[in-house]
Image (cartoon, rainbow, N blue to C red; front, side, top):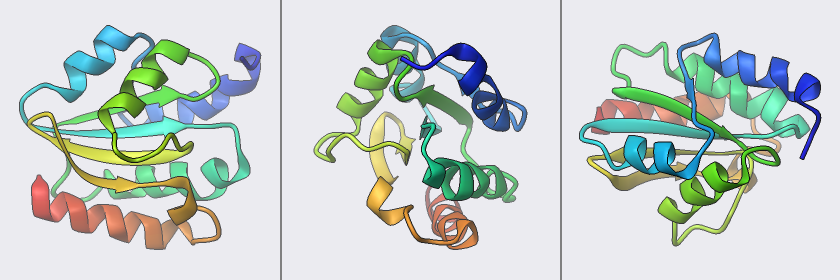
Length: 136
């Protein structure tokens, strides 16, 4: 677990752009398994989250077609919420940061850490926008 003062600005990068922060397993399950589209960001303190993942997510959700719900969980903080999100992302291995799009409770698109590291935020955002255009 990280000190809250350390992660607060990282949380705010997403919540200030309309993401709801989920902090327990039940709220994650309810959000992801709901009807419609849900975009989940597994946030992290790592550099690739700061330089690539969060900027990409923030840019992508400004697209004309966007998910019905925007949610985030924070790796290294709310363990039960993160574990539930990762469980719903199976068969993909745990990854943080990562981003997933669900439609009617089914995983339809995922971006794992290895697809985030070393890639420009715009490239990741374009990938997400393609998924939003297809599924939202």
